[in-house]
Amino acid sequence: MNKYVVTNPATGTSGPSFTLATDDEVSDAIGVADRAHTEFSRRTSVAERAALMQRVADLHTERREHLAELIVREMGKPVEQALGEVDFSADIYSYYATHGEAFLADEPIELLGGEGTAFMRSASLGVLLGIMPWNFPYYQVARFAGPNLVLGNTILLKHASQCPESAAAIEEIFTDAGFPAGAYRNLYASNAQISDIIADPRVHGVSLTGSEGAGAAVAEVAGRNLKKVVLELGGSDPFIVLSADDLEEAVDAAVAARLDNSGQSCNAAKRFIVIDALFDAFTESFTAKITGNVPADPTSPETTLGPLSSLGAAENLEEQLQRAEAQGATVVARGTRDGAFFSPTVITGVSPQSDAYREEFFGPVAAIYRVQDEAEAVQVANDIPYGLGSYLFTTDPEQALRVADQIEAGMVFINGSLLDSPELPFGGVKRSGFGRELGRFGIAEFANRKLIRILK
Image (cartoon, rainbow, N blue to C red; front, top):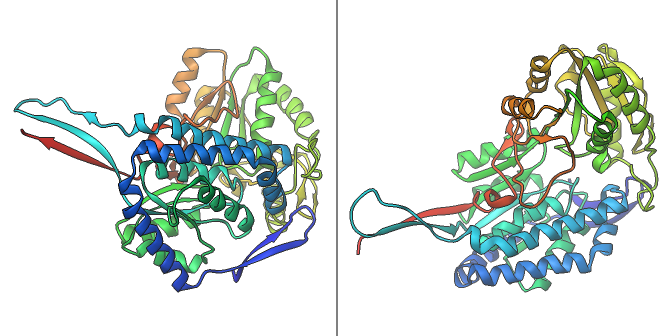
């Protein structure tokens, strides 16, 4: 990677390019962020920082059309979904602006004996590095930057190389909102520079959303340098259907959960695990509805399915499907690739011995599994290395909680999909990473939970 370059996946045309930061520029950026922590964060109150964060939220709303236009061009997100992402990001910033003081308030400790008092105080750590992906250019940054800037940490943000314009637009918003130089710094760093940034003693933690391989590499460097790390990695979320009063409601939720962001979401439903009695009807209806979404121009408000993020991403998905079919999968509805556009595909008969059984399909591909009972559904759901999110449809409330307790995932959504909200913690287990973002837990990940014990 020599530059950050915008390549429109819908048209294949190249746009602006941005030169990589030099090593000296990276070091200078760390220094500015470190000074901002000392001179700004430690001299302002949570309330003062929260007021600036509310302005960040307001500016996202004011600039929503421009911000959406950038990511439509950079990674092909359909424009209505792009606008929705900007709005959700604004909601996250506003959430922490509103609740930051309460989340960070001192927590008294009831002493077992002795005089005096004790309490826990949340303090900032300092400079944090965020490494963010292309699939949700604004939302991923909001989850990380929103709570941490209210807490008082300062941010170095290395965005995906195909999202340089949206990365710059985010930095501009923080500056225009009144945050000082260094509080939030966009950095066009190379992958090779990441290790040195993490190792720098002025940097106190790192958060990455990305691939399993990238997460392992970052965690290794962070561990070697004793730095706190939060990882949100891949997922192959199960969507379990055990019973339904209205099967079409479950099907609609399943299609929405698979096609959000053109199928390029870590916590999208990718494996549909259906009880035998409902399998045929579910598969027929699901296939008809998902294939009704035709890839189209992402700039059109009517488009529900855009291109994948790049030609390479579409070619990789095509290769995965070819391999799955060669290893025994049945193609119920065969999607086709046209450049970076990829139409929905449905497969069944994926055996535990095939690569597709445990791989993540990052695009509009759905694998449907037939199971005989609840126990088999749980077994199939858990028989993967990932554990990010999961979905469950059942008419039995006791079964819902019983199965939820058995699913090896960081999140379980019952009888619904696309229920994400700023107050709901986000994160996974197993090879989907560790740590939580959003909600009250998200603001505590990079906090120094400091005990203060007063005798007199």
